[in-house]
Length: 128
Image 1 (cartoon, rainbow, N blue to C red):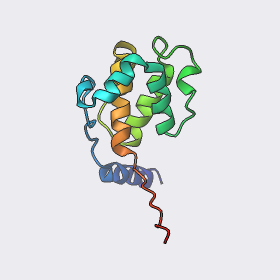
Image 2: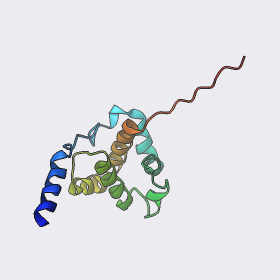
Image 3: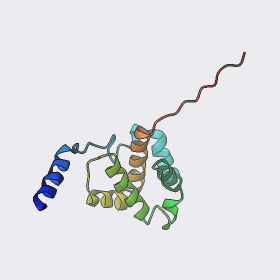
Image 4: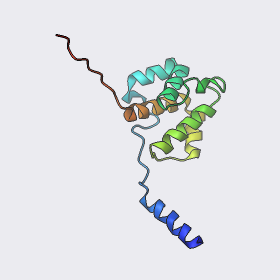
């Protein structure tokens, strides 16, 4: 039984796709100037936007203090985004980004979610 579980676990790991790179680097803020400005001037609002886009409560970043100084929400969202989308990185890198480069981290997460968020277009039939 133990060897069967080991083989099943090994086969599961072999079929996993390798992690892919983030769509943009941590310091690639000028790839999306609007997000860069939004993050620099209104980082708490950007943090709420990222949280909402990821499907969490939009007030999550504000629930543990000022998001610019206390990074638990940013760290957990970053790790979740990385894991959900199969992105390269580690928890140590998430901690460093969330603590040392707060604005850049939120901007990178926002750019990544913009890439993964489908755009829905609703068209109305013209009335005749």
